[in-house]
Each structure stands twice: as structure tokens, then as C-alpha cells.
Length: 371
View 1: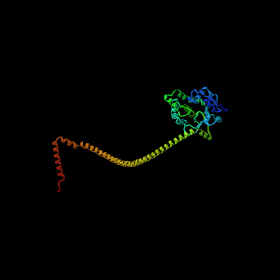
View 2: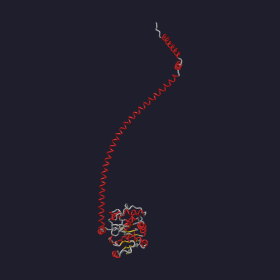
View 3: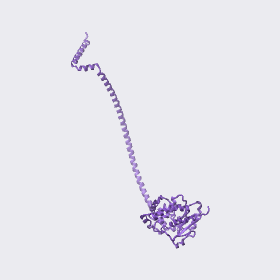
View 4: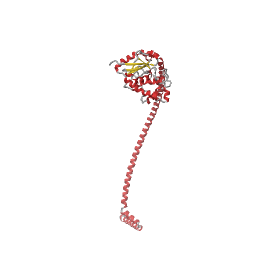
């Protein structure tokens, strides 16, 4: 691969800042500073619209404080890009606050610590711009996290960057509600700006790297010695991070105690439920025994019922036989004669007399004493 053409501009806003510029970069005057609230982003947008990013393979616009903040010179940064150019990265960047990536899960949580309210405000703005990402849940590491606009990108990256950031710029410039304006232009608690604009816009770079996985990015890696020098140079930041970590530690300790209390309560609740379960098992055993006894009684009742059923069928059978016998008897000559005589009482008396007479003759004839 041929040696790539790298063009890095260094922005200055006042003439006296030229003394701090790196000889390896090209000075870029922004003394007129037509829109100072936007800091570097106004330069990015203006340069992109003019097509300056197309004049080299890789283009970047760094602030006049680059050396002061990063503690490396421009030559070292350019060498870093050239050494890795064969891996076809789209953007190279350097993060002068590497320890913040260890203290916070992402740059927005860090931003909310130093600039209260910036996270929720930006989350709302991104939603209105149609950018669907949860700023509290994303994670930044050394390959995606940067707290300054110290990056150099190719044409593809510039196109993606402007496409991602321009809707946010347009909303903040033209569509804010009065309440949103009051917040955006309130004191951001930082010495370089009295509004939140630069701190929102500079964090969109790292947010883009997480959102757009088509972008191949590489972050500069500090040596241990360089990290030590950075720490000395940023004592105030490190001190604040120490307080932040202590606060987090105290919060975690409280959560740990709460979890221990919750675990103990759960243990007691489990013991109570075990006792209830044992009582239920005891009751279940007694109920099972009672059900068995009732089943035996039910079986006995079923046997008794079956016996009564058999007796009923026998009685029913005998009743039918008796009924048939009554029918036969009803139709006999004797019964019909008796019924007929019942209609004529005098005949009945005569027949009774004849019957008694016959009976006496029979006795006389067959039961006489022998001589």
C-alpha cells in the first residue's frame, strides 16, 4: 500500500495561541469564530461543506491544546497512523483521559457526573432526531471512547460523522423548546464554556463508533510512563475520579448491605415456607388416611347397597309371581262361583247349608267306629 496522505489542521482562536501549535500540523485560523458556541464542531461542519476533507486520504482538525492535553507531539500521533495504515482503519483517535474509561461505563455517564443533566437532555434530543440508542446502556472502551475531538478520519468516516451529527446540530440550532434552550445555555460547570453544546457534540464521536459497526476505528495506546505523566498533568480530574469512585464504593457497600439484609429475609422466609410445607405434608398425610377410611366406608355402603338391590329384585320377583297367582285365582271356578253367590245372599245360605250337610254325611260314612 502506498503511503497515505494525512492532513491534520490545528485550530486556534486567538493570535497568542499560535505559540502552542505543533509544527507537525497545519495552523487553521478560527479567529473570526462566527459561531463560538459550537467550538470545534463549527469548524468540522464548515470544512466538510467546503470539501477540505477530500484533499487528503485522512483529515483532522485538532485544538490548539492538543500537546498540552495529550502529552505527545504531532509527529508521534502521525507515526501512530502510518504504522497502522495497512489495517485499513477509517478513523484514528487519541483519548487523553484513559482512566475515565475505567471509572465510567461510557462517556455519557462520565459527562453526567461533570455536567449534570447532560445525559437525559441528549437522550431526549437524539430521540427527537430519530436516533434510537440508550445512552445509559452503551459501553465505551479504548477502541471507542474519547473525551476530546482528537481524531483523523477518511472520506467514509467524515460522511458518516456528518450524517450522524447534523440532525443534532439542526435540532439544537433551530427546534429547541424554551425549556430546552434554558438548559442548553445554562452553566455547564466547566471553565471553557458557559453552555452544554461542546460537551454534547464531542461525545457524539464515540457514540457514532458504537452505533455504526461499519466504521473501523483505532485508538492510540499510551505506555505506562505516558499514562503516569498524564495523571500528573490532570491531577484535578484524577482527584475528582477518586471521589467519584469512593462515592460508588460507598453506594456499592450500601447495596451490599441491602442485599445481605434481603438475603437474610429471604432465608427466614424460606424457613417459614418450609415449616408451612411440613405442616401441609402432615395435614396431607392425615387427610390421605382419612380419605382411605372414607373409601373403606364407601365400599361397605356400596356392598350394602348392592345387597339391598338384590333383595329388592328378589321381592319384586316374588311380587310378580304373587300377582300372577292372584290373576289365576281370580279366574278360578270357585272364585267366580263365590262372586256370583255374593250377588244372591239366599243362594249363598243354601249352598252353605248343603256344604255342611255333605260334610256331616262324609264324617258319618268314613269315620264310623268299627264293631
